[in-house]
Amino acid sequence: MKCSILALLAVIGSAAGAKPSLAISVRDGSFNGLDGLDPTISWEHSGKAGDMDISYGIEAAARPTSDLASLPRTIWGKATTDISGWGLSARAEVDAQNMESADVEIDANNSENDLSVRLTASAGKDFSVKTLEATKGFDSDGARVTVTPRFNMETEEKDIVVNYDNGDTNVKLTASIDSQKVTVSQQIDSNNRVAPTISSGGDLSVEWERRLSDDSSLTATLKPNDSLDVEWKDNAWTANVNMPIDGANINGANVRIKRDVKF
Image (tube, rainbow, N blue to C red; front, top):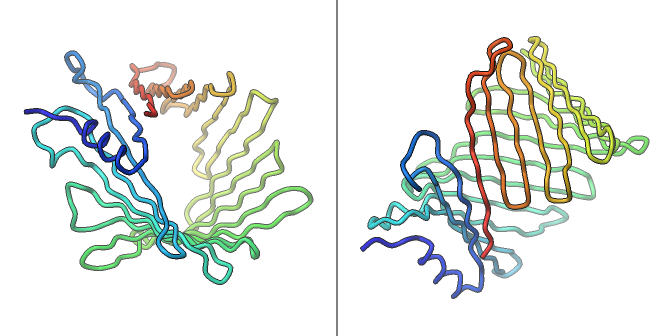
């Protein structure tokens, strides 16, 4: 007999007092009927264990199946606490189809010193650090400035991100030994924002965001001779359109539509 993870999580959510949420996306490719839909459901709950705040959850496929083991996609847990002025959190996420390792995120934040540190790693038979970054912030003449050095242990890449934000204008500089990239985001008015990006290699892109209402916005990103991406958000609906560009020609379109449903 076929069953759905919807029924399973409905029971769990009822017992734990938490409500699951459903997201429905359109899969790539050609399908008959409703086979092109890719519904996923997520459920989470939180509590306390001593001085720690604990949260945990699951994301699973919502397609009817007789193989219950194939339904869960990811299982995650997070613990948060404060130690000597530092807010510490550790989050682990496991691929439900491969339980041999977990992706780990560790964050430490010190509001008094305006300093934060993030580490990502893989934990299994061994503990392997993937990335490490630290962010130091300060205020300057009414503007917010942050400096973030980043290290990728897997690729041995290092760069630094400097961000300047005075409310209407945001300037972001990403620099490494091999390349530099600058993004200048300008809030033109209450409904329009434009953000061009240029890299030292000559690549250029322009992002335009148009606020349609309190819960609706349209964002278009143009990369000459590469692509035009359009994202439309309307409350719980999100539609993404990717159109490859070759010169002045648009070669088709890839469309993704998603809706989040709260029970």
